[in-house]
Length: 103
Image 1 (tube, rainbow, N blue to C red):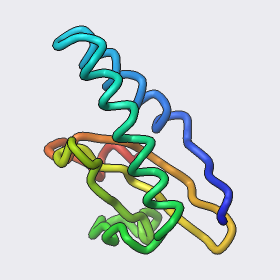
Image 2 (image 1 turned 30 degrees about the horizontal axis):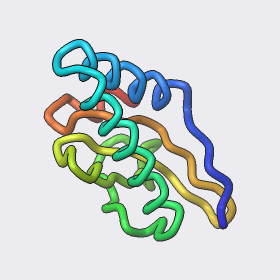
Image 3 (image 1 turned 180 degrees about the horizontal axis):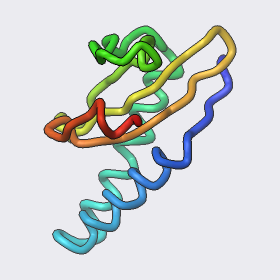
């Protein structure tokens, strides 16, 4: 199984969204969010090619994949993978200007 790593922005994204859900709707939704993110990351570990390749214009962003979070379909996990590692880059709402958030 490949090694799993998280970029600091990805960790910040996950925690900020959990805090937002907690403030807006309570701990139950924040907990559901945490479980959904974990489940999605496990799915990526089992099937790294499951995520669709992103169509970013910037050359340095080629090879980034995205997959929606189960139960939160508007949120996406962005990651790269090699034979021995899956690196989670960001966890973002899909309605944002996504490419600009990777600069």
